[in-house]
Amino acid sequence: MKKKLDDVATVADVERLVTFFYARAMQDEHIGLFFTEAVPLNLEEHLPKIVKFWTSILLDTNDYKDNPMLKHIALSQKVNINKSHMSRWLSLWKGSIDKLYNGPKADLAKSRAEQIGILMLRKIRESEQY
Image (cartoon, rainbow, N blue to C red):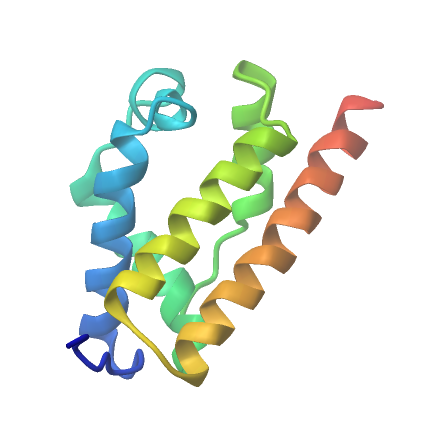
């Protein structure tokens, strides 16, 4: 019998999701290099920022004040981020959510990630034209 999953409801839930996702993403053969080689992440420093980002989106905390688009545009100038990379990121993100959570906030995390991915690729392509 499959265990019923709770929805994302607290900062601790977001932290669990982000930590789980990054553990998978950093080891992924398709996108892991972005986190380990292109810009080696210090997870102790990076994860709290990403948790704030997703907490702002999912729990309406509005305490994330950075601009992730600029950082990803700069990253793509080092190692090109393309549609297949974004698709893999989205697949890992959605899979992480589905493994841990179920409900309206979990669905929001997936739909917002899709929107963010589309926008990010558009902004990266626009930056390449200048």
